[in-house]
Length: 248
Image (tube, rainbow, N blue to C red):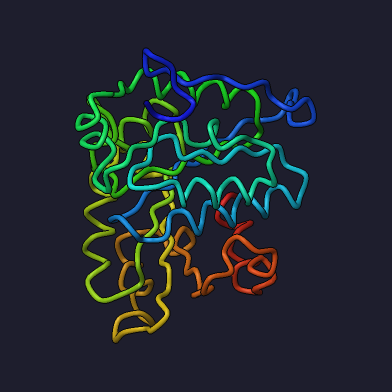
């Protein structure tokens, strides 16, 4: 059984901390997806969560579905400073390191899109900003009847596409943008995550994308090593310039 679930595979809902409730604010939801697995979604989601909390914003960062371990959810838990439990952040998790839909099927605990949406919409009502991290790429099967694209549409979320800043990635970014619904594509942002060792295309990928996607919505996240869940990551000048523009 996924942690936080019950015999019917439904999450246990925890009480929200009173200090994180808000009234009259415009709620915003960002869905962090990617061109593929391992692109850097958790890195960016954790940075956004820390930066927003630093500014007193009531923010929740969730990775509703995960497989092959809970390291990503644990990073988000640390970034939120314990304001949400691990079970609230990641109510459905499975052992096998394959896409969550397949992992759930292997454990005979399938998850439906409507159940995940109930969990996410409850948090939308209680936080100024909701960050939702997907699993794998945009169209990777998350549940029996849906993927990240379906969640983006249902939540009316702004998609943030994270992509490894390396040779060949512009094609992957354009394919991902093309797969988004028209409204979501118009609101989307693209973040190239720089690698530890740049290749021949790292310095020019953002420029290459520019004729096809607005440059003001394209960002480059520098290589931060292992410091993503530590406060010093936010001291990076490039990161601090990027984050407010990303969620403007």
